[in-house]
Length: 77
Image (tube, rainbow, N blue to C red; front, side):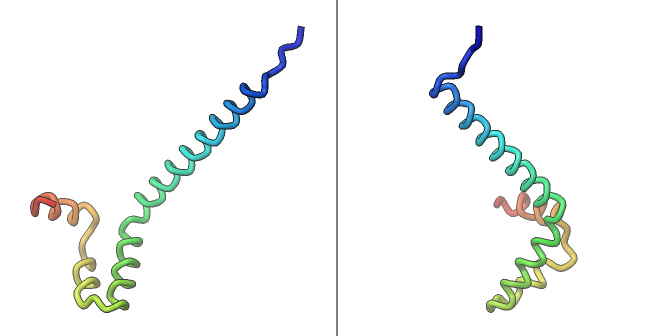
């Protein structure tokens, strides 16, 4: 006795597969952002300073992400 999937069952399976793919990509993106957060922050500051912000590069240089988060917490942001 063969069990055949109905059309609705296949459609539900496809949706679940897409959701799993989206979740895996999101987790990978978060991991990459976590690993390269300081470098990304430096690149964004460089872009901001080249677009006209005078103090963007000075705000970033020498500060680690953990220090910035502590300062934001202390400032109430």
